[in-house]
Image (cartoon, rainbow, N blue to C red):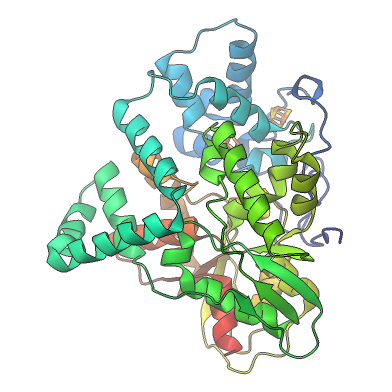
Length: 450
Ligand code: SF4
Ligand code: SF4
């Protein structure tokens, strides 16, 4: 089944701040990028600067080398051997959020994220990075890729530690600043919710599709309720939902950090896990960052003689849950929700997958719910995988304008289709004393249909 196009991806929701004269973005096609030409044949940056106003790090830091154009210049110079990798060069490249906003804005179609991924792979484990950053990145990418059984044991140990006073210590630590405060804030804001989804849920009424659900490596523990709502809504829309038991982390963090070989290993493992459960019409993901990664597996494994075709097939049938529910349609919601909701576009859904209108349409269909406008809704919140852990100061500088816009929107709920954004905004709102609930759109939909 071809990926449906999101009719409102452009021009009505173009990123605020991009010059009106900027030419249209690339096609709103959510399919894989496996058919791209080799890197050197891809479009060159023509230095027009259209991407600059769209870049959150350029807005926050104000330096050319922290803009897409500046980073592309650094990457080309590194590649051509005109400059050496120094601590400063690595830092400018590391400070990119990989939010894809520059790709949306770029009239030349420069595949920025792919070029950055390539450069980061060359700089992998560089000693030019601060030690704390290296240790944190390695620790997190290792932990998320562990088998679920090991993760479960780790979570049980954390819960025990919490009962023995860790919760109080975390609360104290979260009031400080730096890496430790961010980590403590994120842990406090997303405790395991203990909700587990069944391995098979039959469609309600006539079966229209058989779909497989990606649970997420962290989300399966901390956002189990979102998975449960996803399964129930998909069943209501006529889907038989299977949850492949052997699935693991999708490798999104590894891919963004340039750990391509690890990302490939995880992709192959997951491909086998999804193939194991039989023929699927779609693979459904409810976390924007993971969805972009699955849609990219075709490109990632394009040179693998065994997996290339299988990866491309899975990428082509991957859908964000909101995208698929919008396409299939839901019965009318039964419960009104009297809430003022601001919708924050997760970068990897808006810029990575070009899905913008579907979540808004679904939310607007909930009786009683008022969708309030949010300025720069598609501007990154600073979460960006583990960016907020590795670069807490810059992540906060990127989050601050988002919080200010949320506060002035008058919303009492912010909805975002990515667990990382929800955790980042919740932690920021708590620190700022903002009364703002953070919810996945699927939670709101699930309650309205409950
Ligand atoms: S991916 Fe985002 S943060 Fe990085 S250069 Fe592009 S717009 Fe800026
Ligand atoms: S990346 Fe694209 S938008 Fe940015 S300066 Fe280069 S050509 Fe222009």
